[in-house]
Image (cartoon, rainbow, N blue to C red; front, side, top):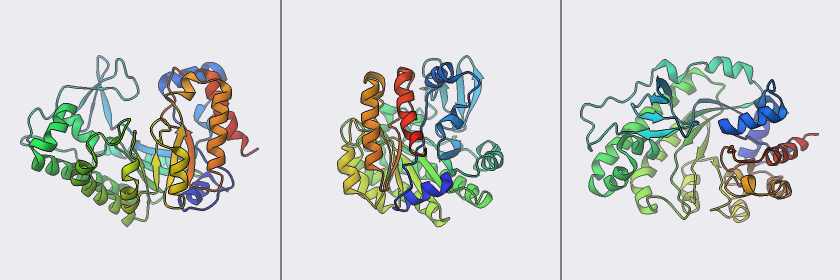
Amino acid sequence: MTKKEVIKMVLDGKKPPYVPWDCKFTIEALEKMKKHYGEDVDVEELVGNHFIKLGQSSGFKTDIGKDRKIDIFGTVWDMSLEKDIGNVEGLVLPEPTLEGYEFPDPENPILYAGIEEKIAANKDKFVLYSIGFSLFERYWCLRGMENAFMDFMMYPDFVKDTLRKIADFNIAVIKNVCERYPEVDGIYFGDDWGAQKKLLMGKEVWMEFLYPELKRMYANTKSFGKYQLIHSCGDIAEIIPELIEAGVNSINPFQPEVLDVDELMNTYKGKVTFHGGLSTQKTLPYGSVEDVQKETKHLLELGKDGGYIFCPSHATEGDTPIENIVAFIDLILAQKR
């Protein structure tokens, strides 16, 4: 059975032969793994992830020098400290107006570069096209975080108009991807809404401003017969029913620090698949090998009947002891031995 087939079983609510996984690592963590396993080791091959991700989870960026990159929306990213995603520098839209601003072209070749080659090299994997910073995150990258929250109250029409245009761009990209590359199995949207307790903007605001555009984007994915997978950090438990209603098949990163993993798995079994769950804020960086093994085994037990894809609740960070990284990798690989 291929990795693609196992993922589809889980997303379809069926019992898989084992719990599949898809684990991510920061640049610093990958460097640590190379030192442990050997510089010539292909970490992706070693871990054996079940997804191949096309597109970009943090946006399409071009190097402009001095540890800076610019994405296709015009946002400049300072990569000097946070080397995986970067930190936003300056404002693309300093005022609440789109006058003079031009949205990216969904025909831009950078959006589709290398797709055919990656699909051909990963035929056994579940193929995802990733659209990172897909709605609210894209909005605040353009306007700045403080302005974004003020805009909900002060300039609601501008917010709705801008979110619609962002969604229009994403929908055009999805259409191109699905029509040009039928091998793509699903679309993966990244858009953080959660804080440590509940939503950053509150459910009422989320429902009024974000949910209509999310439903449009997700419906577009479904119209092509593709699976819908999303990423949103934080406590988003209060909107899981709405996400399911909108057609979401999988929710990541399933943070155990702010979500009750056991309760949610039991409540929504057969309705949605959770992807994540191993603590990257506590267990991995600060726990013992035994702690990591215990938490990993518990998650694998929870997911043995389906509805779960294993991974740390975010990309494993560089402050994680290599022994802890090896501990969870050994356990997930052992399922197939």
